[in-house]
Image (cartoon, rainbow, N blue to C red; front, side, top):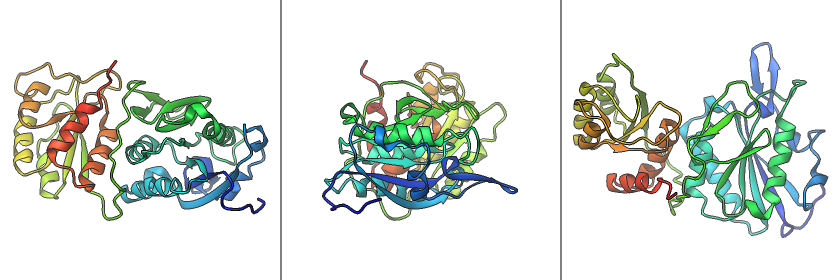
Length: 325
Protein backbone atom coordinates (compact mmCIF):
# COMPACT_ATOMS: atom_id res chain seq x y z
CA UNK A 1 0.00 0.00 0.00
CA UNK A 2 1.21 3.51 -0.82
CA UNK A 3 1.80 5.78 2.15
CA UNK A 4 -0.57 8.74 2.16
CA UNK A 5 -1.06 11.56 4.62
CA UNK A 6 -2.95 10.55 7.76
CA UNK A 7 -5.69 12.99 6.78
CA UNK A 8 -6.62 10.91 3.74
CA UNK A 9 -9.95 9.06 4.11
CA UNK A 10 -9.37 5.46 5.07
CA UNK A 11 -11.07 2.28 6.23
CA UNK A 12 -9.71 0.47 9.28
CA UNK A 13 -9.68 -3.32 8.90
CA UNK A 14 -9.39 -5.06 12.29
CA UNK A 15 -8.40 -8.71 12.01
CA UNK A 16 -9.20 -11.03 14.91
CA UNK A 17 -8.77 -14.48 13.35
CA UNK A 18 -11.61 -16.89 12.62
CA UNK A 19 -12.25 -19.06 9.59
CA UNK A 20 -11.84 -16.14 7.20
CA UNK A 21 -8.16 -16.03 8.20
CA UNK A 22 -7.68 -19.78 8.65
CA UNK A 23 -5.83 -22.55 6.87
CA UNK A 24 -6.49 -26.27 7.14
CA UNK A 25 -3.82 -28.25 8.98
CA UNK A 26 -3.36 -31.78 10.28
CA UNK A 27 -4.51 -30.44 13.65
CA UNK A 28 -7.64 -28.81 12.30
CA UNK A 29 -8.45 -25.42 10.87
CA UNK A 30 -6.50 -22.62 12.54
CA UNK A 31 -6.16 -18.85 11.88
CA UNK A 32 -2.99 -17.96 9.97
CA UNK A 33 -3.61 -14.85 7.85
CA UNK A 34 -2.87 -11.29 8.93
CA UNK A 35 -4.83 -8.16 8.10
CA UNK A 36 -2.31 -7.44 5.32
CA UNK A 37 -2.88 -10.94 3.93
CA UNK A 38 -6.62 -10.37 3.90
CA UNK A 39 -6.26 -6.98 2.20
CA UNK A 40 -4.07 -8.62 -0.41
CA UNK A 41 -6.47 -11.49 -1.14
CA UNK A 42 -6.36 -12.03 -4.89
CA UNK A 43 -10.11 -11.86 -5.52
CA UNK A 44 -10.56 -8.74 -3.41
CA UNK A 45 -11.23 -6.01 -5.95
CA UNK A 46 -10.90 -2.75 -4.05
CA UNK A 47 -11.20 -0.94 -7.36
CA UNK A 48 -14.91 -1.78 -7.33
CA UNK A 49 -15.46 0.42 -4.27
CA UNK A 50 -17.41 3.62 -4.79
CA UNK A 51 -14.37 5.55 -3.55
CA UNK A 52 -10.69 4.70 -3.31
CA UNK A 53 -9.89 4.93 0.39
CA UNK A 54 -6.75 3.56 1.92
CA UNK A 55 -7.26 0.38 3.95
CA UNK A 56 -5.32 0.31 7.22
CA UNK A 57 -4.91 -3.17 8.67
CA UNK A 58 -4.82 -3.81 12.41
CA UNK A 59 -3.84 -7.26 13.70
CA UNK A 60 -5.64 -7.24 17.03
CA UNK A 61 -5.60 -11.00 17.69
CA UNK A 62 -5.61 -14.29 15.80
CA UNK A 63 -7.95 -16.81 17.42
CA UNK A 64 -11.01 -18.88 16.68
CA UNK A 65 -13.94 -16.89 18.00
CA UNK A 66 -14.99 -19.89 20.08
CA UNK A 67 -11.71 -19.47 21.99
CA UNK A 68 -12.22 -15.77 22.73
CA UNK A 69 -12.52 -14.55 26.28
CA UNK A 70 -14.99 -11.85 27.28
CA UNK A 71 -11.95 -9.60 27.73
CA UNK A 72 -11.04 -10.28 24.07
CA UNK A 73 -14.52 -9.25 23.00
CA UNK A 74 -14.31 -6.02 24.99
CA UNK A 75 -10.88 -5.40 23.41
CA UNK A 76 -12.44 -5.66 19.95
CA UNK A 77 -15.17 -3.19 20.87
CA UNK A 78 -12.52 -0.83 22.29
CA UNK A 79 -10.42 -1.12 19.10
CA UNK A 80 -13.43 -0.14 16.98
CA UNK A 81 -14.19 2.85 19.21
CA UNK A 82 -10.52 3.88 19.09
CA UNK A 83 -10.48 3.67 15.28
CA UNK A 84 -13.46 6.00 15.09
CA UNK A 85 -11.67 8.70 17.10
CA UNK A 86 -9.83 9.52 13.86
CA UNK A 87 -12.05 11.85 11.79
CA UNK A 88 -10.41 10.54 8.60
CA UNK A 89 -11.77 7.04 9.26
CA UNK A 90 -14.64 6.37 6.86
CA UNK A 91 -15.68 3.24 8.71
CA UNK A 92 -14.43 0.04 10.29
CA UNK A 93 -14.50 -3.58 9.11
CA UNK A 94 -13.90 -6.37 11.64
CA UNK A 95 -13.05 -9.87 10.44
CA UNK A 96 -14.20 -12.36 13.07
CA UNK A 97 -15.10 -16.01 13.49
CA UNK A 98 -18.78 -16.79 13.08
CA UNK A 99 -19.14 -18.86 16.26
CA UNK A 100 -19.41 -15.85 18.56
CA UNK A 101 -19.82 -13.01 16.07
CA UNK A 102 -23.36 -12.45 17.31
CA UNK A 103 -21.97 -11.56 20.74
CA UNK A 104 -18.98 -9.42 19.78
CA UNK A 105 -20.82 -7.49 17.07
CA UNK A 106 -23.65 -6.70 19.48
CA UNK A 107 -21.23 -5.74 22.26
CA UNK A 108 -19.59 -3.33 19.83
CA UNK A 109 -22.98 -1.96 18.82
CA UNK A 110 -23.63 -1.08 22.47
CA UNK A 111 -20.54 1.13 22.66
CA UNK A 112 -20.45 2.73 19.19
CA UNK A 113 -22.53 5.91 19.18
CA UNK A 114 -20.83 7.17 16.00
CA UNK A 115 -22.87 7.18 12.79
CA UNK A 116 -20.00 5.93 10.64
CA UNK A 117 -20.41 2.33 9.45
CA UNK A 118 -18.98 -0.62 11.38
CA UNK A 119 -19.27 -3.96 9.61
CA UNK A 120 -18.40 -7.44 10.90
CA UNK A 121 -17.76 -10.23 8.45
CA UNK A 122 -16.28 -13.72 8.40
CA UNK A 123 -16.41 -16.97 6.49
CA UNK A 124 -17.75 -20.51 6.65
CA UNK A 125 -14.87 -22.01 4.65
CA UNK A 126 -11.17 -21.48 5.40
CA UNK A 127 -9.01 -19.22 3.27
CA UNK A 128 -7.16 -22.11 1.61
CA UNK A 129 -10.35 -23.90 0.57
CA UNK A 130 -11.50 -23.94 -3.04
CA UNK A 131 -14.90 -22.95 -1.64
CA UNK A 132 -13.55 -20.05 0.39
CA UNK A 133 -16.23 -17.39 0.88
CA UNK A 134 -14.03 -15.00 2.85
CA UNK A 135 -12.76 -12.80 0.00
CA UNK A 136 -16.26 -12.10 -1.32
CA UNK A 137 -17.56 -11.36 2.17
CA UNK A 138 -14.65 -9.02 2.91
CA UNK A 139 -15.06 -7.19 -0.40
CA UNK A 140 -18.77 -6.73 0.34
CA UNK A 141 -18.01 -5.42 3.84
CA UNK A 142 -15.48 -2.91 2.50
CA UNK A 143 -17.95 -1.67 -0.10
CA UNK A 144 -20.64 -1.41 2.54
CA UNK A 145 -18.69 1.03 4.71
CA UNK A 146 -18.35 3.41 1.75
CA UNK A 147 -22.09 3.56 1.08
CA UNK A 148 -23.96 6.58 2.49
CA UNK A 149 -27.00 4.52 3.46
CA UNK A 150 -24.82 2.45 5.81
CA UNK A 151 -24.42 5.42 8.14
CA UNK A 152 -26.44 5.60 11.34
CA UNK A 153 -27.46 1.95 11.30
CA UNK A 154 -25.23 0.77 14.11
CA UNK A 155 -23.05 -2.30 13.71
CA UNK A 156 -23.86 -4.44 10.67
CA UNK A 157 -23.03 -8.05 9.82
CA UNK A 158 -22.33 -8.87 6.16
CA UNK A 159 -22.31 -12.51 5.06
CA UNK A 160 -23.12 -14.21 1.74
CA UNK A 161 -24.64 -11.09 0.20
CA UNK A 162 -26.92 -10.47 3.19
CA UNK A 163 -26.63 -7.44 5.49
CA UNK A 164 -28.17 -7.60 8.96
CA UNK A 165 -28.11 -5.44 12.02
CA UNK A 166 -26.05 -6.95 14.83
CA UNK A 167 -29.03 -6.42 17.11
CA UNK A 168 -30.94 -9.68 17.43
CA UNK A 169 -28.82 -11.86 15.16
CA UNK A 170 -27.87 -15.44 15.93
CA UNK A 171 -25.89 -18.10 14.10
CA UNK A 172 -28.47 -20.31 12.42
CA UNK A 173 -26.37 -22.73 10.39
CA UNK A 174 -23.07 -24.52 10.87
CA UNK A 175 -22.63 -24.99 7.13
CA UNK A 176 -24.67 -22.51 5.05
CA UNK A 177 -22.74 -19.56 3.65
CA UNK A 178 -25.49 -17.31 4.98
CA UNK A 179 -24.73 -18.31 8.55
CA UNK A 180 -27.04 -15.93 10.42
CA UNK A 181 -30.68 -15.21 11.05
CA UNK A 182 -32.37 -12.62 13.24
CA UNK A 183 -34.96 -12.79 15.99
CA UNK A 184 -36.42 -9.48 14.82
CA UNK A 185 -35.23 -7.30 11.97
CA UNK A 186 -35.92 -3.94 13.59
CA UNK A 187 -34.65 -3.92 17.17
CA UNK A 188 -33.92 -0.37 18.34
CA UNK A 189 -30.39 0.95 18.55
CA UNK A 190 -29.43 1.39 22.19
CA UNK A 191 -25.94 2.68 23.01
CA UNK A 192 -24.63 2.82 26.55
CA UNK A 193 -23.01 6.25 26.16
CA UNK A 194 -20.12 5.11 28.34
CA UNK A 195 -16.48 4.30 27.55
CA UNK A 196 -15.59 0.68 26.90
CA UNK A 197 -14.31 -0.64 30.25
CA UNK A 198 -10.65 -1.57 30.05
CA UNK A 199 -10.51 -3.67 33.20
CA UNK A 200 -11.83 -7.14 33.93
CA UNK A 201 -15.41 -7.51 32.61
CA UNK A 202 -18.20 -8.51 34.96
CA UNK A 203 -18.77 -12.23 34.94
CA UNK A 204 -22.18 -13.25 33.67
CA UNK A 205 -23.16 -16.90 33.28
CA UNK A 206 -25.68 -18.32 30.81
CA UNK A 207 -27.54 -21.47 31.80
CA UNK A 208 -29.77 -23.61 29.61
CA UNK A 209 -32.97 -24.88 31.23
CA UNK A 210 -34.59 -28.22 30.42
CA UNK A 211 -36.71 -30.88 32.17
CA UNK A 212 -34.66 -32.30 35.01
CA UNK A 213 -32.08 -29.50 35.12
CA UNK A 214 -30.48 -29.15 38.53
CA UNK A 215 -31.59 -25.93 40.23
CA UNK A 216 -28.24 -26.07 42.02
CA UNK A 217 -26.59 -24.73 38.87
CA UNK A 218 -27.94 -21.31 39.77
CA UNK A 219 -26.70 -21.62 43.34
CA UNK A 220 -23.30 -22.69 42.01
CA UNK A 221 -23.09 -19.59 39.81
CA UNK A 222 -23.99 -17.42 42.80
CA UNK A 223 -21.36 -19.19 44.94
CA UNK A 224 -18.75 -18.51 42.25
CA UNK A 225 -19.60 -14.81 42.50
CA UNK A 226 -21.30 -14.30 39.18
CA UNK A 227 -22.55 -10.76 38.83
CA UNK A 228 -25.35 -11.87 36.55
CA UNK A 229 -27.10 -15.00 35.30
CA UNK A 230 -29.01 -15.41 32.03
CA UNK A 231 -31.45 -18.29 31.84
CA UNK A 232 -32.31 -19.74 28.42
CA UNK A 233 -35.72 -21.06 29.43
CA UNK A 234 -38.26 -23.14 27.54
CA UNK A 235 -41.11 -21.67 25.53
CA UNK A 236 -41.94 -18.10 26.43
CA UNK A 237 -39.50 -17.95 29.34
CA UNK A 238 -40.80 -20.86 31.42
CA UNK A 239 -39.12 -23.20 33.89
CA UNK A 240 -39.72 -25.54 36.85
CA UNK A 241 -40.88 -24.18 40.24
CA UNK A 242 -37.53 -25.22 41.75
CA UNK A 243 -35.86 -22.73 39.42
CA UNK A 244 -38.07 -19.96 40.76
CA UNK A 245 -36.87 -20.65 44.30
CA UNK A 246 -33.25 -20.38 43.17
CA UNK A 247 -33.96 -17.16 41.28
CA UNK A 248 -35.38 -15.65 44.48
CA UNK A 249 -32.21 -16.63 46.35
CA UNK A 250 -29.94 -15.26 43.61
CA UNK A 251 -31.77 -11.94 43.45
CA UNK A 252 -31.59 -11.63 47.25
CA UNK A 253 -27.83 -12.21 46.97
CA UNK A 254 -27.58 -9.20 44.62
CA UNK A 255 -27.18 -11.17 41.39
CA UNK A 256 -28.93 -9.83 38.29
CA UNK A 257 -31.05 -12.58 36.71
CA UNK A 258 -32.36 -12.31 33.16
CA UNK A 259 -34.73 -14.81 31.57
CA UNK A 260 -35.00 -15.41 27.85
CA UNK A 261 -35.95 -18.37 25.65
CA UNK A 262 -34.15 -21.17 23.91
CA UNK A 263 -36.69 -20.78 21.06
CA UNK A 264 -35.01 -18.80 18.25
CA UNK A 265 -37.93 -16.68 17.03
CA UNK A 266 -40.72 -14.66 18.58
CA UNK A 267 -41.22 -12.34 21.52
CA UNK A 268 -40.79 -13.72 25.04
CA UNK A 269 -44.01 -12.69 26.80
CA UNK A 270 -44.64 -13.69 30.43
CA UNK A 271 -47.93 -15.59 30.21
CA UNK A 272 -47.61 -18.80 32.21
CA UNK A 273 -47.71 -19.38 35.95
CA UNK A 274 -47.80 -22.70 37.79
CA UNK A 275 -44.88 -21.82 40.03
CA UNK A 276 -42.19 -21.82 37.37
CA UNK A 277 -43.60 -19.90 34.43
CA UNK A 278 -42.26 -16.57 33.25
CA UNK A 279 -44.92 -14.81 35.35
CA UNK A 280 -43.48 -16.48 38.46
CA UNK A 281 -39.87 -15.83 37.47
CA UNK A 282 -40.61 -12.15 36.87
CA UNK A 283 -42.32 -11.89 40.26
CA UNK A 284 -39.24 -13.55 41.76
CA UNK A 285 -37.15 -10.62 40.53
CA UNK A 286 -35.93 -11.89 37.16
CA UNK A 287 -35.81 -9.50 34.22
CA UNK A 288 -37.45 -10.80 31.04
CA UNK A 289 -35.48 -10.30 27.83
CA UNK A 290 -38.30 -10.16 25.32
CA UNK A 291 -36.15 -10.19 22.18
CA UNK A 292 -32.47 -10.76 22.86
CA UNK A 293 -31.64 -14.44 23.19
CA UNK A 294 -29.15 -15.82 25.71
CA UNK A 295 -25.82 -15.03 23.95
CA UNK A 296 -26.68 -11.38 23.26
CA UNK A 297 -28.57 -10.95 26.54
CA UNK A 298 -25.53 -12.25 28.39
CA UNK A 299 -23.10 -9.90 26.65
CA UNK A 300 -25.46 -6.98 27.23
CA UNK A 301 -25.67 -7.72 30.97
CA UNK A 302 -21.88 -8.01 31.12
CA UNK A 303 -21.49 -4.67 29.34
CA UNK A 304 -23.99 -2.98 31.62
CA UNK A 305 -22.56 -4.33 34.87
CA UNK A 306 -18.98 -3.70 33.74
CA UNK A 307 -19.84 -0.02 33.32
CA UNK A 308 -21.43 0.30 36.75
CA UNK A 309 -25.11 -0.17 35.87
CA UNK A 310 -27.57 -1.03 38.62
CA UNK A 311 -30.27 -3.68 38.44
CA UNK A 312 -32.71 -0.86 37.68
CA UNK A 313 -30.52 0.19 34.73
CA UNK A 314 -30.46 -3.38 33.46
CA UNK A 315 -34.23 -3.63 33.73
CA UNK A 316 -34.68 -0.34 31.85
CA UNK A 317 -32.27 -1.51 29.15
CA UNK A 318 -34.27 -4.64 28.38
CA UNK A 319 -37.47 -2.61 28.26
CA UNK A 320 -35.80 -0.31 25.73
CA UNK A 321 -34.83 -3.18 23.42
CA UNK A 322 -38.48 -3.76 22.52
CA UNK A 323 -39.34 -2.66 18.94
CA UNK A 324 -41.77 0.21 18.64
CA UNK A 325 -43.41 -1.27 15.55
